[in-house]
Length: 273
Image 1 (cartoon, rainbow, N blue to C red):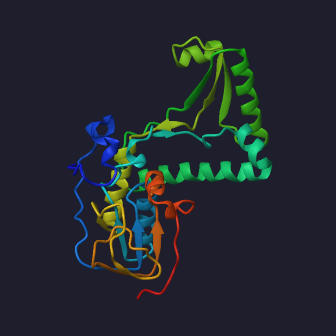
Image 2: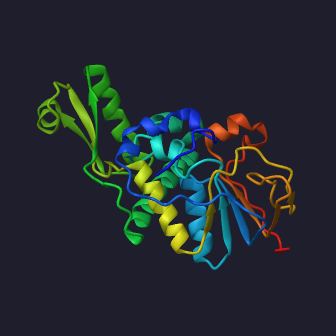
Image 3: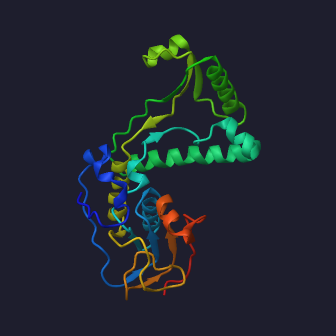
């Protein structure tokens, strides 16, 4: 996995990470040369963009994916790799902010996303060290334990989620050698190698017919583009003829390019021109 230090996301120093050191071999994808003809152009080579490209190609679309740097060379390839049911905010927090109905919809969406990831890993034989060994949140004091008990109750009563239980101090100690007051254990939790998962998505997308271009630059050039695509990743004089666009630039690109804020996944279907 070579990497040009002068391209997009190079400042993240991901080359020094454990995940890069243990990454599966993966091909480099050529930079874009010439013009693009496609049914759909996907901007961004992280999990969102690769999954979108893969699913579109499986439905018969001619798909081109443009990545400003290296596939997986951002949050998709350097996150914690945790597969935990729900969202970062717990069930009680979701209900407090969004109300019971909306909180349940968000929680169900997160569970659906977990299922999709596992399906993709199985369907495409992605080698990413998947381990579904559960997730344990320890209580360091009695107050923490009461909070976890309330969380489990909310998961059951509002989210209809029952693959979780409260552990006593002795039960928790049997799972991890830490003197917790107790714990919350979610059976559906797990972990994977995020970079190898992302590279596996890229391999599956390429096998499905997606054309991937890396090192396209983070900013748009002076390309001549169809109305469904804004020129992201094109060089001067390059043209795009596409029927649709999916923007999946990631948080870092959104900060660098304010016009992406609030629309990290966007597609407009148009007749291919």
